[in-house]
Figure 1 (tube, rainbow, N blue to C red):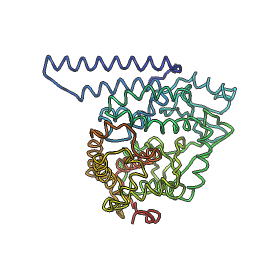
Figure 2 (cartoon, one colour):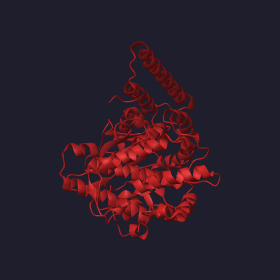
Figure 3 (tube, one colour):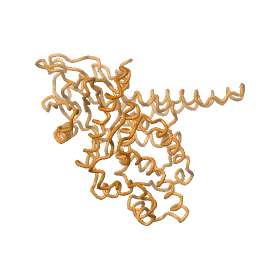
Figure 4 (spheres, rainbow, N blue to C red):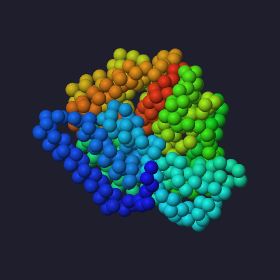
Length: 438
């Protein structure tokens, strides 16, 4: 993949790049409708593919929060057209990398030395590149290391990037301004934290220690002396990303074993720690042929406040909607219903949320859940499409739901999706869940 030898760091440069992409999209639409008038053909899939390619190219060159939002949306199956989902998913593994001279410049800024002066060896080409940073392989005193280097200007451009992306996301993907504002306010806080590699080092050490007794999990050791605000050095973990692991055609026992480890990791974090690794895209996990799972990124961590946690899992109880008084009370507490809602809106939204919660909570209520079941995910996608096209949702004047739920819901969607791709059957019912899901 071609390396980038420059970063668009100023607001005007980044806005200009995005505006040029808007012109490309306009040209794509003109070509599409021109061809339709001449030939009568209306190939929407081809149009979506061209648009997805152009948007991804722009976001890839900008990197940072603009590309991160694309990565996040690619995980929320059912929100984007399939062409966008497939294209944006590349940000999880293989965004265009930064050239080596720019990497050296970052090292000089924080350590006054080049990578080859600090380490015995350092790969000039990145081994992985994503939305916020890229990873290089290094060695020191016989130990293999992974060194994550953040792209220049990412942290300082978050706020302006999100303002730039917001109207495009709202228009192209049929999401109301109120909903996208509600979503991006929480995203901005998490992204600012994610660009602080010193904070990630602390969180990685803390959660690794707390989860060390979960059998089958592997965490890297972090090296503070070779880390800074924008550079993070850790042990190199062996393993395969999900797509490459699946390509080895693992047997069902291996799929179930690794899936169970992943489920237990999240179950422990959510119900015991009340904080969680909230970026569950496949690029953050390494699947090992010997049945171990490596966790390699702790940049995005979400803490769950007690009151939110209690209400969230109470409303996930089976048949909760049959007790209308309790159900409505929880909907108001969690801001799925608002004091300003009319009777029509209350009656409408309580039905939508009852269906949504029942569907998304289904895996909790079975002793074993088969995540390879395509029919279940087709139900999820179908309900998501209904929700996104709902007129009352699209015309919303205020965002619904607690901000604390945004990353927890995203975590569950990401977890479900990984387990689905893995084709794993999981024992999902835990003693902790019994406190709420009875």
